[in-house]
Amino acid sequence: FAPRGSETAFSDGFPLLLASEPSLADVNERLGGRLKPPVPMNRFRPNVVVGGADVAAWAEDAWSAVAVCGEGSSAPVVFGVVKPCARCKMPTID
Image (cartoon, rainbow, N blue to C red; front, side, top):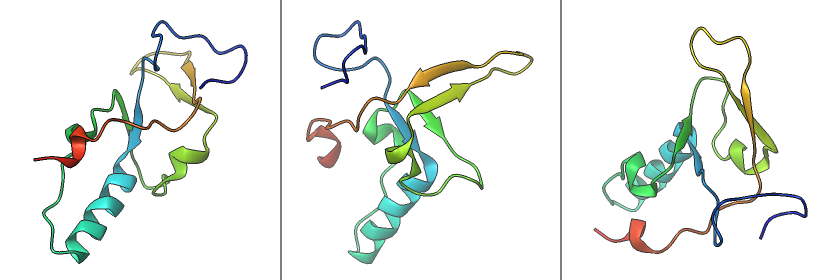
């Protein structure tokens, strides 16, 4: 699943799941067009959620890395974005 040289402590997946608020907003807009109720972010079980005016919906699909810097920290931690995640069907069931 991962490019050669990638490492993970999980045998079948990756330790972080990235999602964005604009992508969730797009999903909920599409659901509204089908007269379905919106879904919350926790339905997709992400570990890292990004947002902001400069983040477009689905932009995270093309990112190769994400830098996270805590408040007061001078050096960011960079995480590689390896591949899209095909989660189980559970988030689609109420």
